[in-house]
Length: 377
Image (cartoon, rainbow, N blue to C red):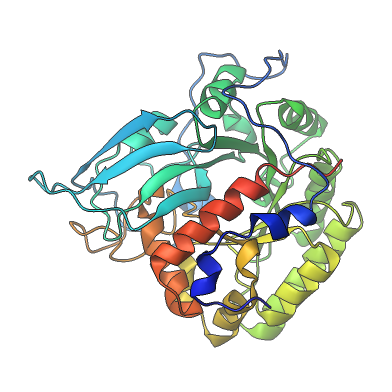
């Protein structure tokens, strides 16, 4: 276990690099390849209701105040986005640190919101309590009906700092056929798609677990060895015994298909110490990603967060879901989440690990650069 102290903020690139067999060299774009079964280039992703896709108590969408400015830089993993907190004024606040949102959606949104797109997400009016220097993130598509077109994938991946992941959410189990899996394979084989995911198991969902396991196995069987896998594992609750059992069950499914060297992101991780040790023991290239749910963690889950080595820690918002309460200065409640509220997540994580949000942001930004460049050979 790595100590969660100020030392965590120091870059650990050399240490992390020793465990990798290679790296993907990033460029300002990606090789263009046609994928016949991708949707037409002009298509737009449809909105999906929160009640269908997330069983969360989310309030009505409220537009926040503020504005963003996006400027491209020269490096693929660098985006200069300066948070400007206005609230009707020209007040500018210094960013706490660099932020990389390792998991957020543009294929889902609230029923009362306009159709989502990356441009809409980046231009949303927000007034974050903890401002960040937003460096980019991984845009996740996990609903087959809303898979991106080739043009959308290329547009996102060519933006400095942004990655694309494509998968099939476990809640679609039972409604997915061979054609969907073939489409998924074509998507994840595309050079502009950085990862497979999210895929996994959602234990509280009404879909029978055997159906979810079947879908997960089909998805993992098309996972490229040289790209990370993003796993959605939602336990039945917060009790230690239940969480341990559910993560262990998912681990056995993954282990039956994925090689030990596979790079894995455990999205919205909520396990304890035993789970952290178990996954790192079986998959040394496992990264643990934390979002706004940290604010509701019990002591068992907080111990798990503290157990995660500093060089295996990632941040995410899972937006438009899981907005931390009070993340926006002008709107104290909970509404549509945004990657620009990543600073609030960093603050929650830092409080548990005993470090400042600046340390968490710096550490996780560096880790994200490593994770999305992993090449397993």
